[in-house]
Image (cartoon, rainbow, N blue to C red; front, top):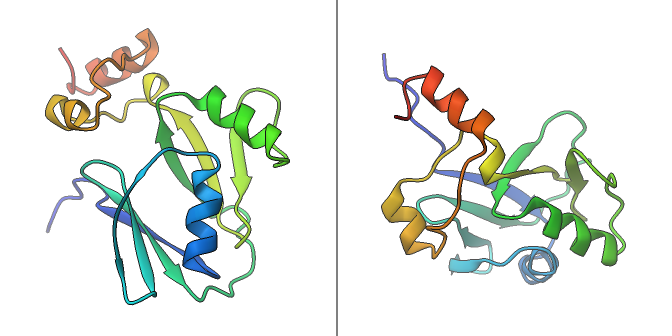
Length: 145
């Protein structure tokens, strides 16, 4: 049996790729990894990516969601509030994009998820630090020194 190692990518259905890229750029800084035939666009996350697939007509997700890791969750909250997106004023940062995808934003420093040093350096994020609780969680699993 194969062991799960990580997530390479997540695919989100959106109505229009250009509109979706413009919408997400309002709140997140990212590099575009590439596009395929006007049907898919790939948002680079270093050693991972998000695939945006054109033509989505699904209903809004309720409990089903995925989490995006950022270097500054509160900066995302502020830009969403300024952009008229309804989000909680503190704590959890969840939103639905215009195509109904439910997204939760989490801060890199507060969770056990880590990127390899070389990946962080390549992403120009090598100064990110983990909170004590995140470090403890990693140590308890034998994933940190």
